[in-house]
Image 1: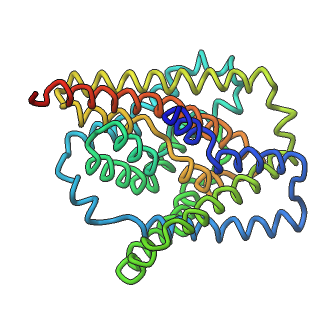
Image 2: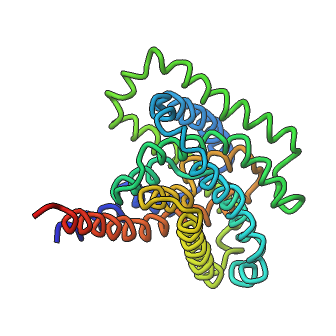
Length: 334
């Protein structure tokens, strides 16, 4: 019973419920007019604070501890920034009829995002994988995503996505994401210990920033008719698309880890670090990259994929952990 309750808490945590509540509130009571302008300013400040805290929390010691495993990191980065985008393009004939053109662009945006940090590390730890390497890969992926994701978005979406000019997008990313991140890294020398001591309530600040961005984005999308353009059929199709994408990537990362000769701990790390996409990075980055009412459709696939990846990877992590424990009991001297 206890493992089941732990699993249910992981799937239906307070943040997931808060996300659903915010989408509902934005649908019923969207901000518009002067309220939308005010929320726009608050959102920009929240995004800056979010990436400042990301920089302040990122431990250079943890990165150094896992940095030497370059073959593993290259494979994880290839899965995150090459395999995902290629799958998004290759499956276009299947995905577009299921979700329509607008949500398909959101799927391509999902494919361009970096890996998530917290859940990749948490699941790797639960499954008894190589945790230092997971910390390094996930943190480096998050940092690389600040540079690579805008480039991939321009390559994948091209003229189809309303991203503004390439130079404007790079400038926005630099000012709103990279500058606060670097400032947080520089400030870590003085505030790192304070950030570590107050990690619990700073997590509320992190999540609150994401919720604010989601509310602003969905409000704008609702005002411009998101739920009139996204049918129930396309929404159901989006579940299938996210499931297909995650299944193929999980099988691919597992196969590549085995074929390239990694040990069990490293294969676990590759599986969980290479199959994740970051909600914490993707939502605020969409606010920076995209203009107009299309932001809601851009982040809807990400929000759904985020929940599905948690559900599936929670089961996989539990199974890996049980297998490792069984192996340890078998090999223990009697």
